[in-house]
Length: 575
Image (tube, rainbow, N blue to C red; front, side, top):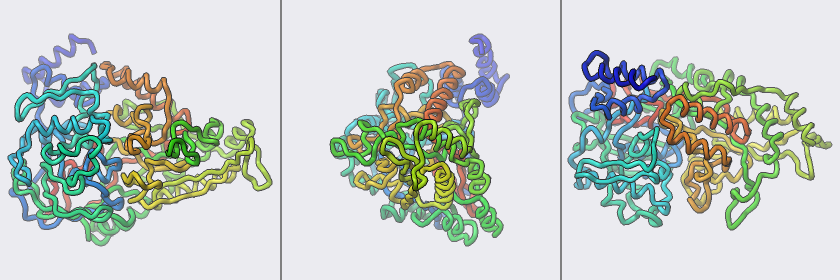
């Protein structure tokens, strides 16, 4: 779009000849995100109206108990240590960001819209807490998982209710710090003594005090979070429910049943359940399945490092190479042995779409050149040509190394069935795969001492879903940059779990951070996707829309681009 045409469109908005919504839609059509379009109007002196959240109740309270099920139980309540989505969700009950993302990918004010009067310990929320959150998250010794959102910016207090954010370089996607899942504001007066190396010792890590719609009552890590209505919540007439229980544990099927069949609970998170079972449970008439678009991806990763070797007291060290997966032919063969179409058809149905891409949404960032193929014969040919010969036991070997490895994931029926499908195909190609399943509360734990967590990756291969919590790929794709490799030094809190690194990838990623041309920027992220999946250490399986279970009477405002609880204050039950 020419600069003159853009100026004319903005002038039309200012004179009410064009609506703000129509302007945003035109910008999206030429490749911009809704937040970037909104920023253009804001910089031109045009105010964007906040997205209205439908809400019927006329007063706070009176709704009785709200009961939520998370089959991967919450293990901590500090959002800046939350390496798993369930810990982000638990933290979102009590802490809020300045803004969040609605289902259409629009930026919606949260704390930025109206400042609360009091927190539940009597201390006012001010700009000091915003500045402190920046200082806390950007300090390396704090080992916050959100450091990438804060380390390259500067935040300055203007007055008690105003801050200014400075960017060191041109920044295409600016709506990162203080926004959504990575933007929750923590109170300075309770965390100031625990910044840096003492960060894990803060009592408030387990007893949160924030600006959210509910006040902390109790918490048993790995079991239950209890809360009650915040009478001083900063949005009038909210929340509706008097108490809140977030129960953890069990499995996805039992969680679905507790909402859809028995109606014991109001909501169940992350319905990774065979679609056939969900349809049967919905037929009971007590609940419904909610499916909203996201960028979430269920994928397998083949370890770049050697989990069996210890270097300087660290397994799976970036200083080592995997004895089998260092051979691209092995990785290529395993990619050919994943029957994605069958996994979609017989396991996921509505809830998982077979894909060759790691980056699937928004659509303008989706590669059109990648393809997936299931071909056992071709996999055999690839391995044979690379010198991997079958022995008497039917397992291929080369240079004294046998094609035997351990493939782990969390305990969950669709994942175990997916493992079985891949194992069966691998056997036909001379690959011996041992399957390992870890309880979800352990696998996704932030426990730095537990070797079975997915972030330690003390295994040959593993599979899980990574959530895309912004309608922009910048943070999502930093899972593969070299400075985000999970190590002992950063307490395995960094985002690059796979340990995959590529110098060219790093360079293009840095360029994309500063590229203001939306079309060029999209092309860069498509190339990054193609580099990752083309190397076959990262093997996409199915793209997963956000699937939750809701009791029929429940109204919950869910977004595929933010935590499920991003609008918890606006949930209510029809009576």
